[in-house]
Length: 168
Image (tube, rainbow, N blue to C red; front, side):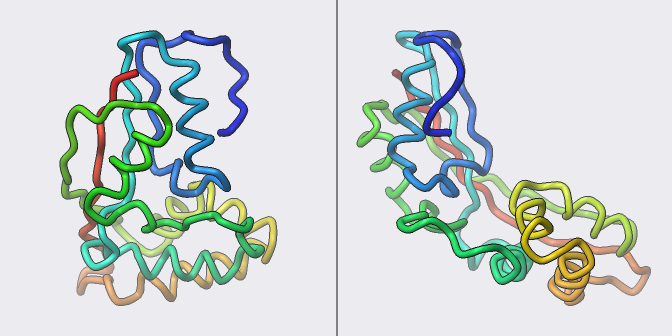
């Protein structure tokens, strides 16, 4: 994220969904997003809300234990979730915050196999698989989501995401 393969001012809108908080240098990553955005264009950032509002926190913790140690200074999944943290980061990268809000997001899966298959897809899970192997990650995910299993075998987790729309 700190070195995008695009020319300056290539895009009207640049988005980062659940990504900047994982960068080794979040300010550098946002600065790079600003670089590839046209003047008066927007950089839109979406991140996890506060951990207390995210039932996926256990899943993220399970993956964290199965990944190699993060790079020094990497802030982690909830580091930018506190009020004002995301806006401050954007300003450090030379962006101008315009609008922010929180949005509820429900994760629903019909059964454990579907849940595990879906939760193996995100980047952190892929990294965990590369470090600990797919079977260990499958087991870790199944254990982490077990508290959210319903009587019919489905899974339901409520979460909150924060988003910030900025202008270059």
